[in-house]
Length: 444
Image (cartoon, rainbow, N blue to C red; front, top):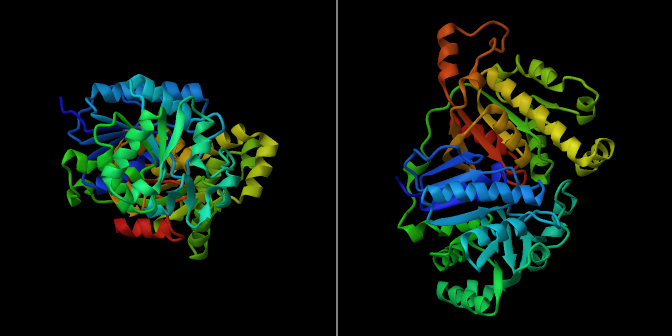
């Protein structure tokens, strides 16, 4: 059996792609599994990222899923475990970052790990234990208005301490900015003082590269995706262009967006301003029993031949709160996810083979609806966001009448039905304003 170097557990699907992207850029061959696999690993790869949808579920359920993923990764011979969460460290007062970290530590029999969401390439930095998004403290960056996991405190030591029984400490920039040896010495002092989890400062990629060797042999690493750039060197792996090669792209292009982040709002507006076709779907109409998915697909069908289309529920935070007050937070989110997942599967049936999905919860719903089990990780579109390739079940790849109203030729339909999908799962906060357009240009 081929033993993998890194076994990774991600708490949402976009975060899994984000982590896999950084590992591929560092030279690792990576497969992303959607959910805990039910069979042994067959591919000869260096790392596997198991993508869960556990960020906002009940802590006990997140723990159970994460431990199941750990058990499978251990069976594949994983030499080090990596628990990945968002670069905005978003969680609730009850978890799930702290509870899952503790459960993994207990299962692995380790008394120490680190925690840092630092990802300088996406302007997420940690200094003196405080998380910054760009030049702003996390709780002033817009994350304080997140509908599911509002972040009201930028002090990560304080945030994590509220979620864990273990003592939380800090490896501050005095050590991180100096050397790998200084980081290792600071870790040993914290362990001797009874600290179980240490937040780590990092404001640049150079900091993460110094941190990487200090983590060699540590049973469990918990972090955002940034730390991943410094780990492959511990296994003798160097960057390689071959690690990100994907098959040639085919088919129509579409975007499905359910994120309500400031970044995705700006991306939606840029797409509309550029004159591209976009359709907003209304959760209140969904709740009234209207088949919003069927309406969206009927709208998209004749437009696909002319270029990418966008279907979105993205809205400003005030609008989201109004919907939540009417339907309830959980029901509003679940209703939108189900509808966008139905739209995504319908678009694929229409012949879309280049699909952008924006938003972590939306990505999870769409990937599960399409029956995708594994993703091959390809080139980076923007920091933290790669193109991926997959071959869903044939039932998801059936080809409906061509968008122009006639039927595709039998040969073309068969070729398209046999082809895989290029898909990217974009975290809501990632990418520049022109992300949607730039992503499709990469596949041209």
